[in-house]
Length: 149
Image (cartoon, rainbow, N blue to C red; front, side, top):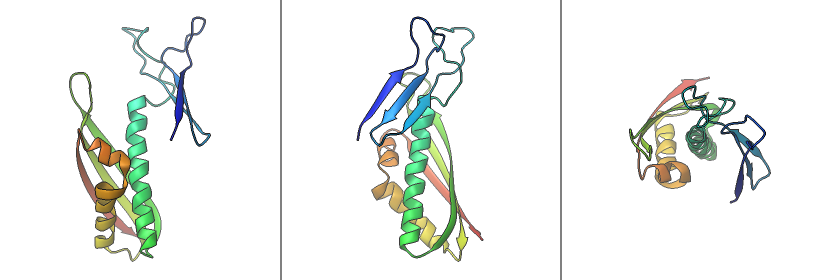
């Protein structure tokens, strides 16, 4: 897996702390820093997600992917899956994630609660590289609900 991240700023621009990531699969992702009125030289322009937000979003995508795939392989009729993530960070540098809460909402026809519980657990224990990696510094708490379609 490869990725190249380039700063979009320079001597003659006011781009602040914007970056573009070019992934090995040929896609791009734009990131930016927060607008900081007190220290404009340190901040961005708030034009894109923060880098750590993209890490959290990527973790959500990784685990939701697993949950859907596991349920589909179990021949369950999955019609939707969302995961809402919230994270707490350490108060001092490095401000790593210390706690991540993930709430899954799975929509489908006749999906047993036990199947969703198993899929979420399998993702976090075996398949989702991102959440397993983040679990080294953060407590990860999961919850879920199933909505009948």
